[in-house]
Length: 382
Image (cartoon, rainbow, N blue to C red; front, side, top):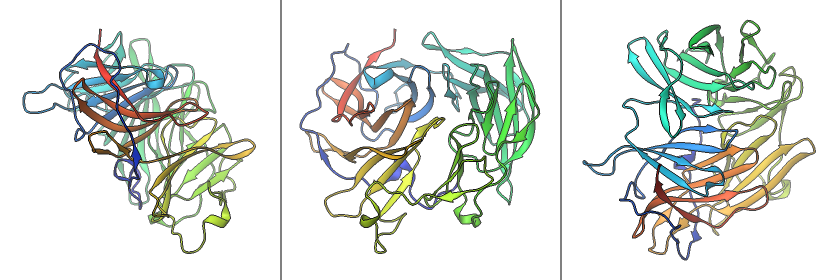
């Protein structure tokens, strides 16, 4: 993950929105699984169905670990107890979420979420020493495992890629890459049988290669992450939230000066990275760049604005106050902004415990408007 000058999403400053009541969705009663202090860890996203998986740590010393499955449009949230010990990482791509468990010092066993349970995916993989493991899919739906070593002084990262063919994980080569973002690996819009990791393109039909000819010329402290939009269009988001765009696979870059408020509202006294800043929602930006703007320039309260870069230019999608306040007076800040599928967004404010049980507090953007905050109670997984 790239170092950032500004706060990360889970630590961003939040504003105030009043939630007069949190009605519990009809559900079978379950014991509390989490509360407002629980850290929810995103495992991965199936970008075809829009399903998300989260890991929930035990609530108290006698608690269990849980996997939480959020259905498309967040209309239901199902809880499954006791995932495999040591499960880590997770895929973002067009297929059921893939994660992994260690089976030895240099051994990795990929696991896929199937039938509401984790099942081994292919044979165990003998791996080089890696600091990061990222499963994903290529556009054809074939699973991949991408491994990364530690970053070098110049920001380059040694990267290895493996594609599942039958029961075996076949090596598709290695190369040095840079400008790796989050997620670290995603389907490649350039090739149906390929995946991207930073500047690197790995495919079943060719050797590893760079898919961009260059990056914006920035000092080390401003280096950021590369985002593929189509086969030739790309975006680069610097560490301080400045967006650069290229229409020719990195031959030329231009700085975007657009803001959701118009140029007259952003003057010299307002500082990007302090009074307002930009971040990427977590998901696959293939086809359209989506940005989250966090605005704390006025005393009315901090707000979140959603935007998207289309062929016709930038579009301001929706706006909402950041923080949710429950009927009991608790404040729930936005902890994660996610794009599970297409132009569907989820603004997650974490977990809450009520008399009816525990569940997620979130808002949904469906392409038209941001919904009011809602409480979706956990139901037992079947």
